[in-house]
Amino acid sequence: MNSTQISNQRATRIPGAETVDMKLEVVVIPVSDIDRAKGFYQRLGWRLDADLTTGDGSRVVQFTPHGSPCSIHLRQRDHGSPGGVSAGTWLIVSDIEAARKELVGRGVDVSGVFHFAPDQKRPVPGRDPQGGSYRSFASFGDPDGNSWLLQEIVTRLPGRGFGMDLPTLTDLLREAEQHHGEYEPTAPKHHWSLFYAAYIVAREQGQTPAEAAGAGIRQVEGLAREG
Image (cartoon, rainbow, N blue to C red; front, side, top):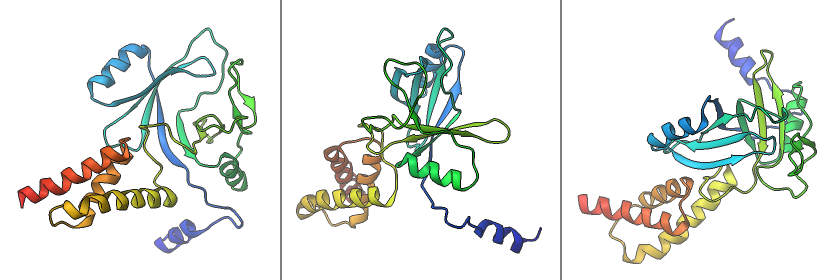
């Protein structure tokens, strides 16, 4: 196969199929002793996002390496609980139905959308009744049995960062513009990009707008002192 054929294959799209963002954000790591593993990753200095028991009875500890858009789940299943859903790699989507529709349109065998109810250990068909973020799922596998899980997130929990899609980035730029405008009259001479870059990185790392503005100010004034 020559380079032109490869290029043409890459350019081929399935007619009528939409393109939905699917962000690779979680990789599940199986562990034999979850507390020992938790201690190890804490020593690495990774951010501890959560330590919780899920609806299927398994314990999940989530860490995010500094500056990484992808997190890990340490998972040790409760052997006394029923099966439930376990997936090795998670894809985050903003619209679970649209994402599932696209995959089906591409010939993928995808489960129906499901959620977990507080009083049941097994998946319940349908989206989360309240439409809450983090609560609606669908799953599929590849020919070798590797599992993928779609999780719908519309609004993220504090400190969990953002999905870098166009609307989110637009909102962050507007935030940065507002805080930069408040700071600019008293700021040393600088290029606006110094403040904006530090602001957006801080917000992506889970800092509040006020904290992000502080990061922008430190970036500008630190470079001003060096100059």
